[in-house]
Image (tube, rainbow, N blue to C red):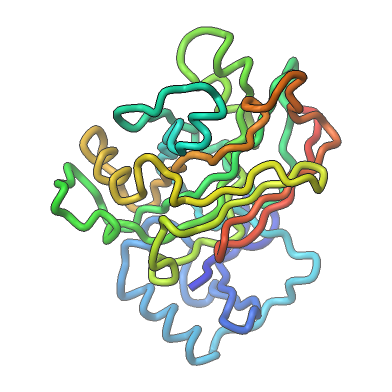
Length: 285
């Protein structure tokens, strides 16, 4: 299923995109798309049955804002330097273990909402990423455990980053990762049954219609299942948590000087195979 949330920011309603591409209203069936729903197999079964039966009301998509596909996100765990080609382009050694940092849940905006260039920024960068949405609690998973059974679905994430704040201003990466609007998510949460192999997805990103990133999740150093297992050793992953799994080559940081960092007025578009497409105007904060 393709689950999404539509409407004005803060008052989105749950919806579903059916197999024919028709937008359907879920608000009469569920309260929202959140961790509680994703952990409730019976509720998801009712949604699936209603979708297959064609019983859900049709929504007029014209002019309707698409919000983040997940409400009440618990935490956003991010994996840095997780693509072989991205490590090569930045001159970094591939990490021996996954690099973990966090984004605050309030960085999340809709897939087509404006992204704000922070005040004083000169190195705002782009990163298309596969987002993994947790549906079952994952705690101390063993190598023999089926880590993907804990995944509810997948989405497109844009891990916007300010490289000067991240790298040159001391401390951890957090200053360059948590500026407002720095995690557009969506348009859909695609349930895991529709993504049989998360290591076989193409990712692309354009800036002002110029292709910048053209990669595949097959390049991940630590695949999705290993990332979920690894993270669960250090923290409990709960339904409604999100993992951003890293970005392929092609970011501004990896380009020759002068590096083409984002400026207000730029337009970024990004997509992942089967998971939908985003489009953002860059505006000053």
